[in-house]
Image (cartoon, rainbow, N blue to C red):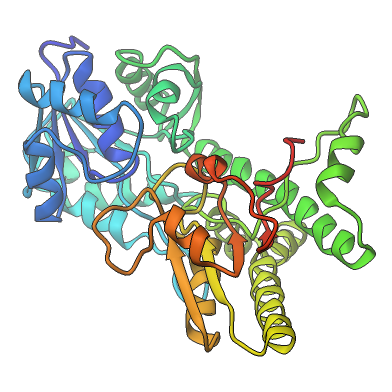
Length: 405
């Protein structure tokens, strides 16, 4: 593929779609980004961004100003189509691939022989093949004349730009020709190694990576519950256990959030319920951790009122699912904060320094000053600047006041 000649359409300009589109455009690839949200389209075309991600603002501005990146509210013809839309689960925790289906249907009339169609959205196994069947069902003349592949993203919010370039990618086509064509496309802007496989293996690989992380975090969260009961400092315990040369325990938190780790394990459980027993249990442990945090906070509020004969002011510090981003998808911190807001009868302050212009939020320094009980839910860098006030009750669910383990 020739960078100067190939045209790429990214379907979805969210937390992954926009950075990927902008990064590809920075390599002088002609990129169009499609999104159904007019605000997103208008923001990008001004050379601005609607999410928090280091380095992304300057990259988008430069890509738009140089003419390599354009956002649109309608799909346009291209040579490469990349689906980067959400794949949530339904209320019964079954995978919802309706967004992938809608994105696929939107470009079927535009496809032509020789085109490459890629799904990056986290998907249940066999989704890529289902989308290929949908395409060929409506456009049978394209059978064996276009390339269809799956290539999951594996980036960390807050470090997306670096990881888009340097992380290895797993690429699986519906046939070997599709795999090779997708590898040729990603080699235009990815420095990491490209690992070739088939579509089903690539789909499962993404789910397994995040399920593995979920299981490891569940172990740490279980430790935190036991240590609380035994009056042991879990942070010290993990630090000491990790001195063993073959032990690497992760840090506990108030649960697990984000679109990947909190969602992907359920895709495996839904497809293989009789086998995915450890994966299911880990997911349940991490969900219960948020409930446990709510109970601990409400108990602390009741204890404060009993001693002081007045209701405390509670500051819920952090709403995002991880530090230094604004992404609240499946965030346990947000869930805990909203539960406290609804169940606590006193004043509760919500704090998220990465979100601007929301009048329901309180600046972090003001919230800390006013609060009687400070609940650390996310380890944002701004919170590290606050000098500890020993006159306050501080409940640390993210290790902010502890040395790194």
